[in-house]
Length: 515
Image (cartoon, rainbow, N blue to C red; front, side):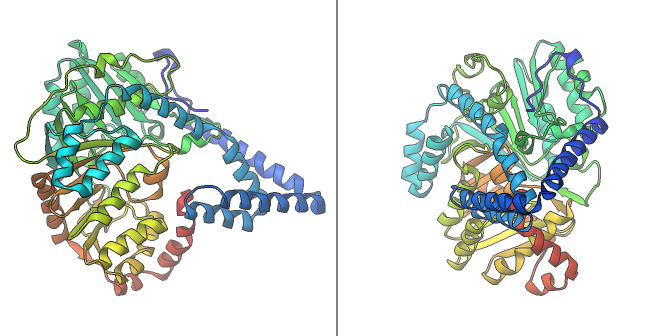
């Protein structure tokens, strides 16, 4: 089972990608070999495996899971009853995801002692808006995500805007810096950050940096060693290993920067040049970032610590970081801020519930920016229900995709959504990587959570819910500015796309939950 890499520098050099690929291929060939070996005992083996497939289908349909996920597996087992059943058994028997979920739950409980609910804040929200006080109650009860009022927020409509602000705040660090990102790549963005981090580490500032293990395919050999040698504590979340494990399907998609427990950043941007438009990959890169300054940063750093320590066996002393007087910055206007996180197999689809609650409570509009649109039945119905109630539901999507098949799948949802009043806008300058919801000039979410199965069910994600008129106005102004350079799609537009793109989208949509 893959783990967060916590070994010493001399032990952290990753295996060459080629070796890992060869070993993975050998494992897959062994599975197929076993399959064909059983086929030689045709009558007995066929009867046994068909019985197994039927039993697995019955088991699957009786589990409390997303129906689209169940249907995808049922189709696989109907088309390939032997191999499909065997593969499903392997997935179910490997304890990777369940074990990881248990460890995350343990860490959430350990940090919960330092994250009490601010009852006065929730009651003041209830007086202001009972509709969303219930959501605050839910986020604390299910995920231990308190509500804060003494936090100032700032919205950056582009990674280009956030980049200099992040550098400026990092320069002011005096005690510690926590960083957790999904993607990191060498270039102007990373080089500038690394220079500051090295200097701060030399000054005695504690610097912790964690990135996802999928970067091993793109980063040069010795990248982690270079960071450690600079005095920075660096960990890799779930390094890819040549061992089949469900653990490796659950990536750390979070983006978190915390400085001295006072300032925090999150949003869509990763640490690579395309995110600040220093490198063009898919046209203009549209992303968003939120900056927090105040007591809500306490939750953001707790979320970081939960994954940083997730593979450690001992009881971590969280008091060093969390048992301190919150850094409060009072805000004159009505203001409530809730940083939150979501994890796979934690017993709740918390991120999806936040999005659906906003759709269900909206009275005038819900405007969404997302790079991917691979939806389950419940989310489709929530979008349609809001639109049919007279709410202006609009989704801003990329016009230039980064991944073609997910883009074809996303477009397969267009006709149904458009037919029921949901507006779909494609950002003509390039690629939208932002993940934002804004509603009714009062509520907004900025974070890492896409509208697809990976974000909502499989990845570790985080976001910030802000109930503040001024902040919501900033997010809405950005949406409207982006809409001005976007094309509103029609059903005719969809029908004019190449037929094979539409066919691929429709077929692959069935397997969207497994992608």
